[in-house]
Image (cartoon, rainbow, N blue to C red; front, side):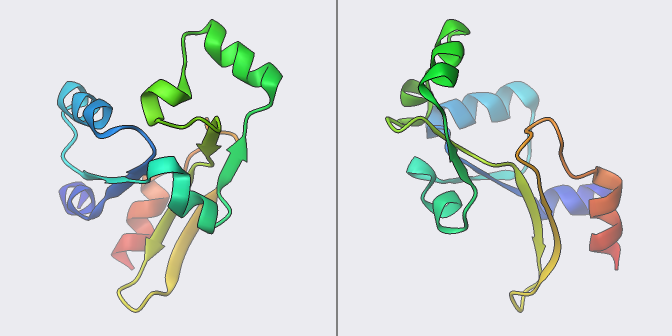
Length: 115
């Protein structure tokens, strides 16, 4: 079942393609990355937040530069979300949380795929 799930999975990311390729190789990821340059898709569905100048300074202190890694001069980040969308466009499962540490659980996603 997990192999079936992995083949269905795609990751939408604002990262530049060369960084995506490095991540896929380093982590041995087999699913596809969908490029969301400048968070266009995330913006359309209301899943983008802008970093405050104070938070931008903190990111920079840790060596994180969204302009370099994403080509993102606005310093915006997508809000993590997981959706299972049926072929007819109906959303079967949705999980959204502004805290990037909280993600949809694999067991819950696999359960919904199975039904």
